[in-house]
Length: 305
Image (tube, rainbow, N blue to C red; front, side):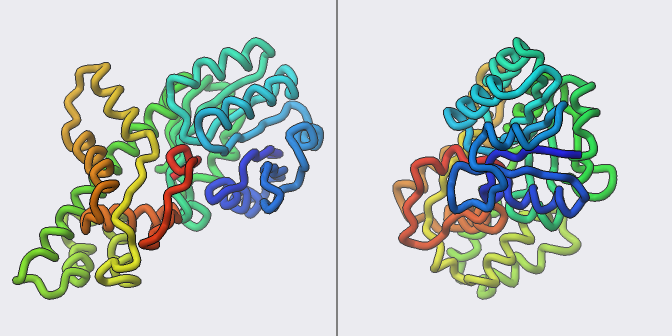
């Protein structure tokens, strides 16, 4: 397929590479002059695409995504389709879909997981929207996802993709926090003399093995006492939204809620447990971990991961 990609950050640029390696014609654009784009602005990107067009938006959630979709709504034509693959809140998807539908432009919301490792391993894709549009973009989805039957779901109508990704990230919060608390307890005990080796031993034959555990072992191999990691962990927004959705539905999610609050606590103390969370975020998302790193103003709205 031919596809326009708006946003060439850590996730978007790698997705473009994977798509091109799979034989797709991708026209990339990023407003940063330093990004390796193919078009100077959105009108130029749209002009380079043959109708009916497909444009994937991979920019920070909130205002940047809304502005991008608004502009695309003015530039695109009936029969085109827009894909929001960022970490937008699911409640915004209906407004985006209605805005585009007024011009007979399709809309899909896609939750994307895989972080900086997606280029090599593939991305898990959670899609919301009309089945006809999903089928139309399926060649792109099939290239981006891992090989095999897993890694893709058409979760439901518009909003379902981002809702599913929100819950996914809430679960991620809880798993990461459990590893982090286990790490802190092990390091506090005088009985355990090889904490990195303990985590490495759990990679095979245990019921708690996972990709996150593999990434933690990798982080500890690079920095055994996590001295280069600052005990600060940003929340991407989806953890908060997961808790809010649980309150709206009267669903108890104490583990996810506690993991979210632990990240808030990280902004008060240089916690050993939060160092693990920060190290894991760096492993799968490339987030800064240096002790003197200062969180960026838009870090809570980063696309992807």
